[in-house]
Length: 287
Ligand SMILES: [Fe+2]
Ligand SMILES: [Fe+2]
Image 1: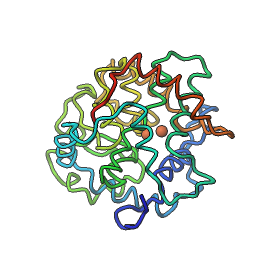
Image 2: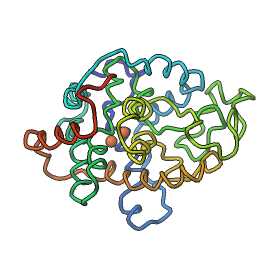
Image 3: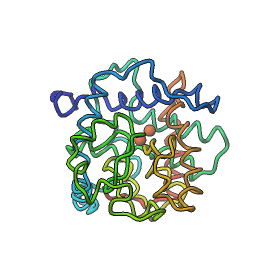
């Protein structure tokens, strides 16, 4: 997919967003468990522009509309491996020498999880966690596929990256939606909360009947940085959410910091992942 429309598609590659997350939350700071935010190197203009469009357009109504459409799962039926290969047809303008393709990111994440001796469902989760990015191949713009996710239907936290861009979101001045709790109630639990629309929420709904609950939390909330790194929405979280977010936090470093010097051998690894898929998933998944 060539990046021909810079106005609506500012990122040269979806990886540009993830690279920026790593810049914001560097691994060194994570290891040192310091409260540390990287203000020194500003994001590239493309990333900033991406957040600007994302924050303006992700409204409560937009999210409800996308759910109504995409949660019919009437676009494509694929086996897990077919979906991985389909996602890999997503080619951006980025430098192929620097950026990994989508399959390699998935395999590096899952292989790092496997190397640490975690359960098979956790490894499988690493392998499929970004499959929701096929939304791009269904014609969705970048800002409705990737980016940090956040609750809609209540006030936007200033702990979300570039909070100033929310001022032009129509919900910002909507009195029903712009209070601390908005349409929700204190500690109501995230199950009741609508998140901004993107690859996380989409894939959660595709897989929700097949994987254990910690896996579903990892998938659904892995881009919810303002909560799992900043604790900005404790007032909506239930005690159970907090328990489950321990898994989201366990997963996040594998997603961000698992880039290995040698790319994984896709051909060699395929049978292992097909066996894993057969253990947990039906033969085909509906997208
Ligand atoms: Fe992701
Ligand atoms: Fe990822």
